[in-house]
Length: 124
Image 1 (cartoon, rainbow, N blue to C red):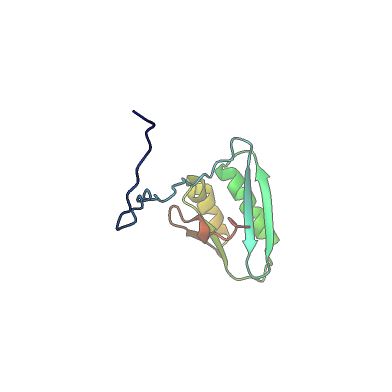
Image 2 (image 1 turned 60 degrees about the vertical axis):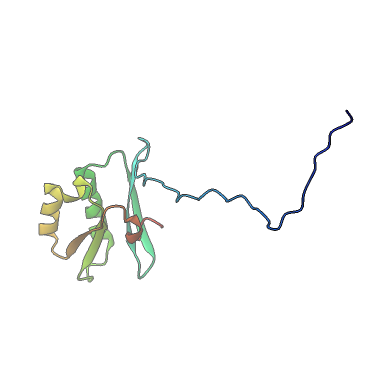
């Protein structure tokens, strides 16, 4: 017996293997700062001005302190302040409710879950 060789025969149709179906990439939203601290921020879309302040923890006391800083930062002639916040429990704590009673020009707007893109401070 002599050497063997592969034989090829011309076919009528080109056969291409099907590519595997691609699945949508999934990534959970990560709000954590890995225990290194938290940054609270306020943004004025009309002027582009922003105010940020770092805190060690995300507590209602720190949040109310930051709201007080924002209150002093925003021009007193502004009649309405809309605060877009997520559904974190510190954003609706009793201290925050008392703050909103003492400052009637503030209105808190709670964004839907997994809709961080609605809060303009996120991309800033």
